[in-house]
Image (cartoon, rainbow, N blue to C red; front, side, top):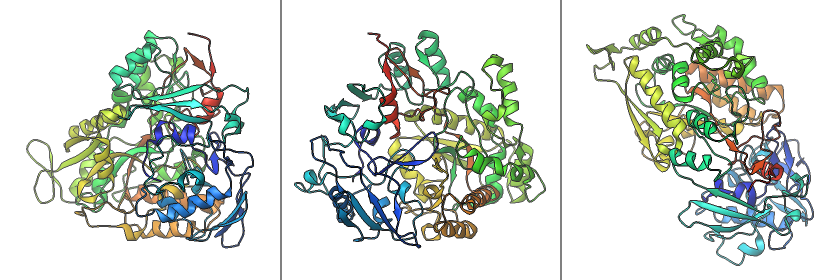
Length: 578
């Protein structure tokens, strides 16, 4: 119930969820639940679900409805201490849960809930609802119990871990065929051990990778991957053609702007920042062209493109700013491919369909950006730098990650260089992960932040935009963390669309259309400068193991930090190399 090292195997190997998500299709399926949730009333506030029989905790006790009831009881009882229960206690009506029998539970939600399976199961990489073993926690002070060597529902248990946080070693349960993930296995074989380890900064990590010291990397920059491949033929990428890697991550990279703080409260300023961003050059210099761009604040993936991206291309093509200017560039992908070819990339490694780089982005037009700034009172000084309407120097305070995210760090610096070339002065602040998180949600710390957000994987966008509500708007100098609406975007149109959609079937055309209307509002107001899908540049080393997800064997997204990584563990096979 507290924050924990969940990206070190817990949600991938140890925990199990009521419902998981098929990352190839976006469909929800039962993991602990025996099937889909049953809706008990027309208002969609009462639900019943049945658990699978024969799933056991790693200490041999069967998982039953008693654990579900206990978990709900305890999430609410610990609400003032626990840091990871808000998604449950704000969603479920307090005291509404009832045990029908050992495998059946009924529960009510506070509001109509058409996303019950996703909210109480997996929306993308893990679940709000983490089942607790009643027989363990009831013997402890449940709200503060550290649960260091936990009993698990997944096929693995913690064998050893580094107290300073650099590694976790997981061991296959002897009775793993009674675990929640057993049905993912097809051949009766599972790796005996799985090690999650921090191998250090990229410069050190890459040397270890060359020497076959580990198997799956996370966010190694493209140039380093190529250098490693030159030294080790066992290192592979997701696809043989650009952008080489699977970029179906739920989240996107872009500029999160404090819409309450001048001058960023002016739409013209935000549009100027977008049009002063030379994204083709940024992508070439920082990512070797390995990116999927999108002007819409949503990931352009195999699941979402046909529902949300392609239907809005005509809107983008016809979009006109107040001065009559059309900002959309539909030829972005074709131009990027031409730049890559000119830079020496083999034609065979370029995609046949250049929209593999995205359907387009905004034009790079410094002149139009200048006109927009002048229209709201900005002027230039003798050095060619922009001044605020009051005559003071305009210096964008841009917050980016430090070394803990090399890809964002490099692209963040590249964006700053592009803005400087347009006469926009920038002060780039590299911060650690804790401060980066604080900036995201604190008005007086944030001006412009290069951030990942809009995390939407399945067709249901509610998980990302439900928070856009008026009650969360705070003054620009507000020093406490915002309780919601990270955009601090005051949009009555979007408020209405979100509220209406809470009571819609999330597989309905009306729900999808509302999502498209929200995307249009994001663009019209330029309330978030979307840049690209997260460039998940993830190489794998297949010296010891093979069977990782690839473009021609896409059974799951290849992300080791998602709960769907359990599919990878179940599918890989040893090569026999020692």
